[in-house]
Structure formats: C-alpha cells, structure tokens
Amino acid sequence: MADKIDQIFVTVLHFLVSYLPEAWRPLASSLICIAFILMVFPLIFSLTTIFERKGIGRIQNRYGPNRVGIPFTKIRLAGFGQFLPDGVKMLTKEDVVPRAADQVVHFLAPIVLLIPVLLTYAVLPFGRNMAIADYDAGLLFFLAVGGAVEISVFMAGWSSRNKYSLLGAMRAIAQMVSYEIPLILSGVTVVMIAGTLNLSQIVEHQNQYTFGIAHWFVFTPWGLVGFILFFIASLAESNRSPFDLPEAESEIIAGYFTEYSGFKFALFFLGEYLGMFSIIGLGITLFLGGWTSPVSFLTWIPSWIWFLTKMMAIVFVFIWIRATLPRLRMDQLMGFAWKFMLPLALINILVAGLWHFMSHDWQRWLVCSAIIFGAYVVLGRGLMANQKLGKRIYRYAE
Image (cartoon, rainbow, N blue to C red; front, top):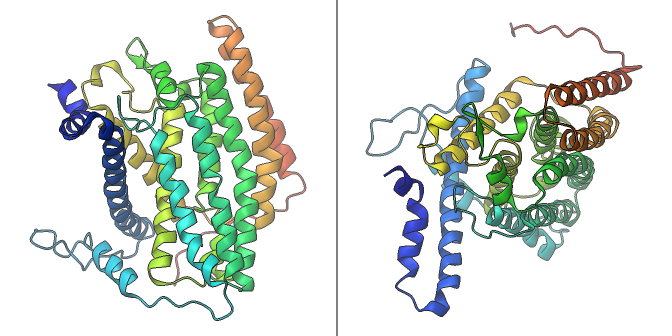
C-alpha cells in the first residue's frame, strides 16, 4: 500500500499515456509533466507568499494579511485567500512601459527569466522514479540552464532606460556571478564522492542506512560545510535577505524591475520564487538525501512527501532569515564571497578528496574536521581584519 501511494503520480502518468499510440507517448508524457509543474509550483508560490507575509509579521510582532479568507470554507479572515486578489490585481493592472525603453527587450526579459527557471525542474528528482528527464549530466544541465537567468536580469535593467534599473541589474549580475562560483564548487564535492552528475544516482548514493541513520552527505564534515556554503550562495542567487541588494528600495527603488508593472512584474515575482524553489531542490538532492528518509523506520512515508517537506522547511528558514537579518553593504557582500566563501569552498574540495582516500575510521573525521575548522578560523579572521564594527543595540520603536 505504501509503495502504491509513493508511486501514485508515476502510475497515473503511465495510465494516461497508455491510451495513446506508442509514437505519441513520449510527447504526451512530457506535456503532462510540464502541466504538473505549471500547476503545482505556482500554487506553492502563491501559498508561500501568504506564509511569508504572515510569518514575517508574526516574527516582527506586527500584523500580516488577516482579512481575505478562502470562499466556502471556515477560513474567512485568516488572510490565506490574499493571493487570489493579488493575482487578479497583477493581471488587470495597467502595463506601463517607459517611452524611451527598448520595447522588444523590455517585453522579452521576464519571459527569458521564467523559461530557464522552469527548465531546471526537468532534472530534479521529486521522488522515487519521479525525475522528468533523468540525464546522466543532470547537474551540469541544471547549472548551465540556470545561468541564463543573468541574461534576463541584464535585459530588464538595460531595456528600461533607467539609471536605477541599470544599477540594480549590474548589482544583481555581480552578485550572482560572485556567489555562483562557491555554489558550483560546493556541488563539486558531491560529484567527487558520488562519482556521477546524475541527480537520481546522487540520491541513490545517499539512500543507505547505518544503525538506522541515513548516509546523507550533510552528515559528513565536508558535506556539512558544502551545504552551508550552498545554502548561503542560494540566498544570494535568489536575491533573498540579507543579500537582496539588487532590490535595495532605499537606494535604487526596486532594482532591475523598477519600470515593470502588471503581469510583467508578476512574471518576475513568480520567476524569483520558482528559482528559489528549484535551487532549494538542488541543495536537498545534493546534500539532504533528496527524497529519502533521514531514518530507516520512516521509509514508509512517500518519497515525494519527504522532498516537499524538506523544501518547505528550508523555505521557512529563508523566511526566518529575511525577518531577522539586516541587509549587507555591497562591499561586505562581495568581500564575503571572494575572501571567505571561495577559499573555503576550494579547501572543502581538498577535504572531500582526503575523505575519499582515507580509511573509514575516526581518523578521517578528525583530520577533515581539523582542516575545515582551521580554515574557517584563518579565513574568518582575515575577513574581519581592519573592520571597525560597533556594538549593535536593538530597541523597540517608541
């Protein structure tokens, strides 16, 4: 019974395409998978916006959305229906385009952003046997396609003919290029240990248990450091606090989409969140065992539930960070990437190599942990040298 629930989406897909001629089945299967992604993840995006606004309001001791309920339910004034009028407003709002803007590029920028983000979902294994395209070079495909987002950001900033938009685009590109390097290098350690670029095989490599505990890569010294580096870099790649400088409203209004409104702005908003979900999904696949259970006695829970649970847990951490941490300065953001994260990611690759070739006993734990801790202390002191930081005092507004 548990196996049937686990494979329910695979079974339904096979059932639907079984009525078609053999030559049409691959195309039909692809279209059904695309429809599934276009329905499920935008819905998760809509709900996440409500959880984020209500969660941040709760954390900051203020009100979030609390008026618009869900029709025909008891959830009347909880605010969980707020995304419905928000969506209607986005669809019906006037599309204002600056007179001096490049009309074609201005129109294509949000589309160019959304398409690569959606393509990244093709190689993510959402559950057992639930990877849409099980490529041998799935990780390479994800990183290559995801890099196209930077083109759309530049298109949006340049085509608007607005200095604030162009400055926001330049900030975003500099930030994304800087943090994409440690993000990729943190994933290199996983490829070294698993010996494959196939994301499904990487998950299977972690689907083992010793004394009931899963062999997730995050439970190793190099895996823990790699996951932390990946997590921080994913915050920057997603333009999330405290790395949301491209949208620093006190300096450059709304960054590269300052001149966007209506449905085009909604596409940017949707693309940003879908990109966040996809990069979180990649981090789960590489370091947190993908769709596997952390303990052996919970393997009866469907694999896709484990994947979505891990994803929403990390989304909650993203929201928590946004509600609590202040925005960094641009020099702090760039210095942290090049002076701390990049050297530590390179050292972590060395540690992963030592881990692979050393004997499987306590000595490799001691050696690898000592190298990582020493590198953290040295790089941290080097980063904080000559930094004149005063004591922060937090107080409630009068």
